[in-house]
Length: 466
Image 1 (cartoon, rainbow, N blue to C red):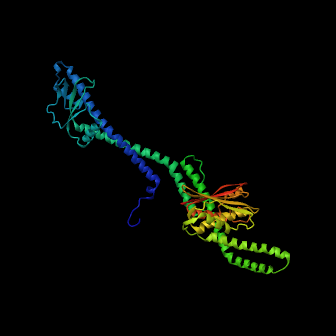
Image 2 (cartoon, helix red, strand yellow):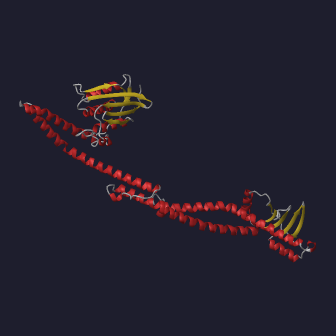
C-alpha cells in the first residue's frame, strides 16, 4: 500500500487471472445477447400455446349439440387452456365461445399476427417488469385458416414461467462461462502464459547477470510466434552478451593502456634521445639504420596517441557550413601524405562549383583518412580519383583507387576499430572514425566494390546544394 492506495492481490494482477475474468465476462455477455431473443421467443411460444389450447377447447365445444356444454365442463376447458375467455373471429363476426363468470378487466392487447422481432423483445421485457396484468391476445388458427382467436390471459402465469426460464438460463450461463473460462484459461496458461513467464524470468535474470550463460533462455522447438520470440530472444541475448564481453575487454584494455601511457611515453622519449645521438655517428651502417628506427619510434608514439584518443574522446556535434568540395578534397589528399615522386596520381573530378553543407574539420578528416588508406594500399604506385554529383537526396561522392583490393575477411569488419585493419599492423581506426563522422552528418559511408581492379568507397551526404 502506498499513499493510502490498496492494490489488488498479486494473483489478481497476473495475466492468468485477467484472462480468466475476461473470458468469463465475455461468455456471460454472449449469453446475454442470446438470452434477449430467446426470452422473447419463449413468451411468443407461451402465448401461441394458449391460442392452440383455446382452439382445441373451441373444437370440443363445437362437437356438442347446440354448441352448449355444462358450466363445470366450460370452466374445466378454460382451466386446461389457462385462459379466462375464448372469442372466435370468423369473417368479421366475433363469437364468444367460452368465458368465465366475471372476466377481469383487460389491461393490454397484443396481436401476435405479424409482430416484429423488436416488438416481441420489447413486449417480453414489459412482461418481466409488470407481471400482474390481464392480457387480451389475438392470434391466428393453428391450421392457418381464415380468421383468428382471442384469449384473455392472466399475465402472472406468463411472468412466473418467464422468471423460471430466465433463472434456468442464468444458471446454465454461469456453468458454461465457468467451464469455458476454465478451458480457455488452461489453454492460454499452457500455450501463452507459461512461456511468457519463462521469457520474462530469463530477461530479468539476464539483466541482473548478463555474463551468466544459465540466465539465457532455452531454445524452443515451437514453430509459432512464441517459439520465434524465444529463439530471437536467445539470439539477442547471445549477441548482447558477446558485445558486453567485448566492451568489458576493451574497457579493461583502455584502462591498462591509460596506466602505462606515461611510462611508455618516457621510454619512447628516451629512445628518441638515443636515436638523435646515433645520428652523429659517421658509420654508414648506423646512418642507414637510424632513419628507420626514428620512423618506427614515431609510429609507435602516434599509434599510442590514436588509440587513447579513440577510446576516450567524444567527437563534437558537426557545425555544417557551405564548403567547396573540390578545394576541400585537394587539401585533404595533400595532407594525407601523397608521395612527391608522382608514384601515386590524384585526379579530382569534382565540379568546381559543387558545394556541400558539412563541418569542415570533420569532413576534412573523412577525406584524409580515405586518401591515407588508399596510399597505404598502393606501395608500388597507382591512382586515386574522387567524383561527386548532386542527387535528389544530397551529394554522392565516390573515392576510387586502383590498388589490389581488400580481402574477404577484411571487408567483413572493415569499419570496426581494432578489427577492420586493411593492412598488417594497422588498427582500423581511420575508416571507423570516418564512418562515425559521416553518420554524425546524417549520411552513410559504405564500400561499393573491392577487387583486383581497385576499391571504391561511397559517401552519401544529405542536404547538398549545387
